[in-house]
Amino acid sequence: MTEELVVIPKATISRLPLYFRALTEYYHLDIALVSSEEIAQKLGITSSQLRKDLSYFGGLGIRGAGYDVSYLLGKIKEILGMDKKRRLAIIGAGKLGIALAGYTGFRQHGLEVVALFEKDDTKLGQTKEKIPIFHLSELSDQKVKLGMDIAALAVPASEAQDVADLVVAAGFKGIWNFAPTRLDVPKDIIVQYEDLVVGILTLSHHLSRKIG
Image (cartoon, rainbow, N blue to C red; front, side, top):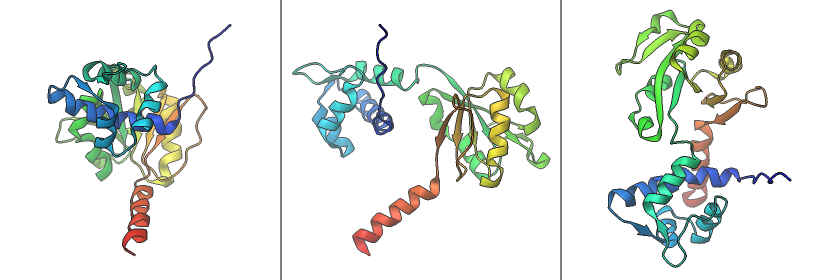
């Protein structure tokens, strides 16, 4: 009899990086144990929600004592795959692609931007961080040479599907899509959507309700 696979809610997964960030702060303050109430208050959520989220992974707490910061930090890193080094390709060397390439916070989360790809010959070369910018036609070859896992799409919506097709054909299994459009990809391809407009319009909605 096979063990039933537990389905983790997307909202729970989306909160794990917040728990990681809070625990990292506690760790750097040399705090060894922390309660669910302390973490929840720091993040503006309920302690019951935090405990429910962590219960999907076995609870991870110490009854009557709270959470061992170092241990829980390590477990969340493992759950999020941060214990594995992920190599990132950025498709599109426009302003967004260059900004992503220059973000220094990726490394501390197990991610490394190793190359950008662009179809405009005038943009080829390297970034100020010395990250190479290859022509898009080299994507398949460089994917193998550089061992890249994830492709970030920083291209216009009108180009996103064609680029996604190239990314899939090159062998990438993970796509981080910044283009404001849905992608049609095979079922075994994991896509994370980052629509910046949705975020700012959500903020605008809340502001309208609060201050008119």
